[in-house]
Length: 413
Ligand SMILES: *Cc1c(COP(=O)(O)O)cnc(C)c1O
Image (cartoon, rainbow, N blue to C red; front, side):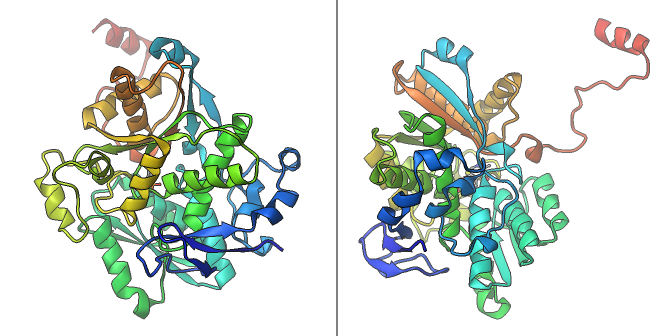
């Protein structure tokens, strides 16, 4: 039987495992801590050859006791696509895109919610709620639907309508919020006692970080048991950065890898960039407790409603520590850079969300700045599909014809 507890990422206190409340008394975040000696007995490179291509191939490092509780829709083991043309164009040793948009709910949020909802089942929960800019809502809706758990999703009203509309299709109670993601979170906290919701928001429970951790395991396994020099990741609440950092530490301790820690680069959109401000210690960092909506309204560029738009990440100090420890950095890209990057990835056959495109824009920027070196191997995360962000019926540039003559006429215009 596998065993695990919790360890505080700030003060190193050790606690027994629990399904809710990941905050230590010191204010740090509690992370799942495994008996790695026990894990090493069954999780070996050879044993992985025989396992199914899903993120659940790393089951010993996911905190579910009874396999019957695992809620899976086929998440993980996404392709790592090499970009040889761009390697020579940009002078990079290696460049890959991790195609997370191919997950069952069209974004990498599937990973976190596969584990989180499995844990809800294991804990016997019947109702769950999440504040979300869209993809977390869709993922909770889908996995909870399959688990027979009632899902309540609270989404800022300016989020992409296709993502919102998907939630009721999965059977979730779907509510739009006139505000930002932290306003949605406040509503859930107010109603938690009365409604009996388990809050599965970022860092509220152990499953989402553990699920996203599998991105790091997959990178290492797909690259022949090593990490790239640099990981560029579109960061909002930051559970993916925490997860992949944890993946590196666990694989290292298990002796499955023997490389340097990858440099973690957090990308955000201009106008909502608390991690970027924190890393560069700008004169006006986003401080907890300030009115975030005022702060956003006052900024010169209003950011798109994407997964990166999280004004107040739940554990900013941990994210800053990871970026610093890894030798990484953080940068903000503009709407225009994101739009150009979406087109560029599109012509490579990759449907990228604004978040995924932001990593491409950041990579170009870091090449220009000389931060990325010709000796570097780089992985970008395309965290979701362009299609989820599309608006219906707005493609004015696409002609409509009835006959071939119409086509000839159109081409001659
Ligand atoms: C949630 C989300 C992000 C941000 O991920 P975190 O790990 O929460 O920082 C990035 N891209 C997309 C598409 C998302 O849905």
